[in-house]
Image (cartoon, rainbow, N blue to C red; front, side, top):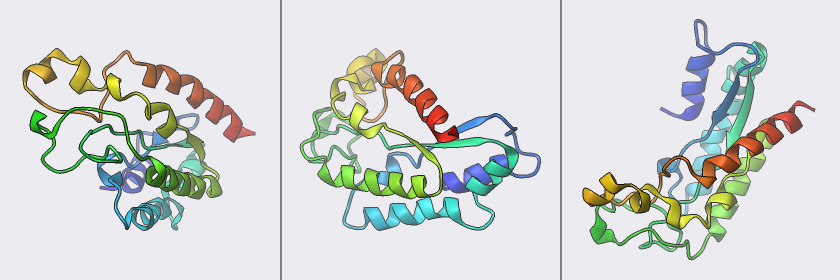
Length: 179
């Protein structure tokens, strides 16, 4: 299910959202693995937000604020972009490491963020702040994950600088988008 579909469900008749609520949405990393068609595919998904009866319009009618959170960086060290590759949930795929080339992912995030802004949706910057944080993933910090030999260079443990920085960005974006 796409984020736009889930959002429409939440905002629909009998949904859980009410005036004054704030929804932070993103498509997530698994859908954002970079390849030659990623930008077109992602812009198609984002366009679901602008269609008739879309999430954006339903939320506005309810008085609910929608914010878009950029995709965070992944840090699998066997790919130049750090993106997950099938089969890399086990340690034989290496470990978490710095992203070698973020240019294509920056372009992708910029295109998606611009599309959301043209719909009047505030955007939370999240890719750049997470890009240098390759040492902060579950695979490096969770004793259970290390014991089970699971490679997780996508998720972060809490508390963490990733989410500590997100709260002020959320408040700033929410306030700026209301002006």
